[in-house]
Image 1 (cartoon, rainbow, N blue to C red):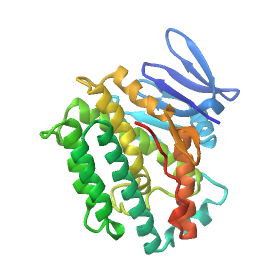
Image 2 (image 1 turned 45 degrees about the horizontal axis):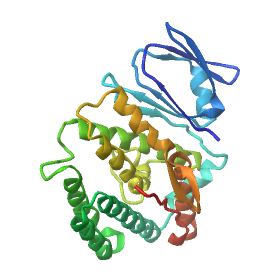
Image 3 (image 1 turned 90 degrees about the vertical axis):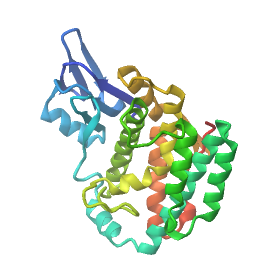
Image 4 (image 1 turned 180 degrees about the horizontal axis):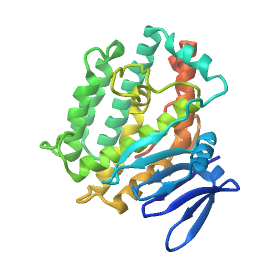
Length: 292
């Protein structure tokens, strides 16, 4: 099973040689077997890659993320066909009943707010955690009263202060956005690998968002990013901080009764959500558990 996260942050030439990713820079040449790679993050815009390498990375379902001139994730490589029965899976996805999608979304929102409450309790924010627990009890079908939005305001203010907003440009938001971007890309890989498309979501349906389904499924995993960003409280957001956030994918959580790294937990969770959607049974969803 793939597990390596490869980050290329300086000028280099990347190519394929006998199932190895070869990274050639001015200082040295490194080789990594592609079967070991879960994620390739290309940070530098001065990196060049061969089409042969990209084709093999796609075939072996390695997630490739490209960064812009500010070294922030800006695009990713997505396969047209992630499964042998992709066409059938897409037809199924299009016909998922609205009632089933809403049932799954309700459970996702409930789990997300629960995770946020657990984190606040860990931080000693008992009053705010209790308020989020109340929101969980108040959730209506398809979160019609937007308990998720109300919880987010309480949650982020409790973590980062009353003056904090998610729209402000600062190191904390840069770190959060970077972490969310990495998690979203990992979800997109699993969606495509299971034969579905990322554009058709459960709740998110923005015509300009090609990752609506990934945006839905990732919600309960956001607190993992919040936890590490709150621990770092970065005054700057550069290479060292980014590497810390990338380690989220190798952090261990409990899912389906066993310890798994987050990268594998996302695989298990996504498969369980698709089972729930296809079987009209939200009890099939496997959420992770973690002691933050």
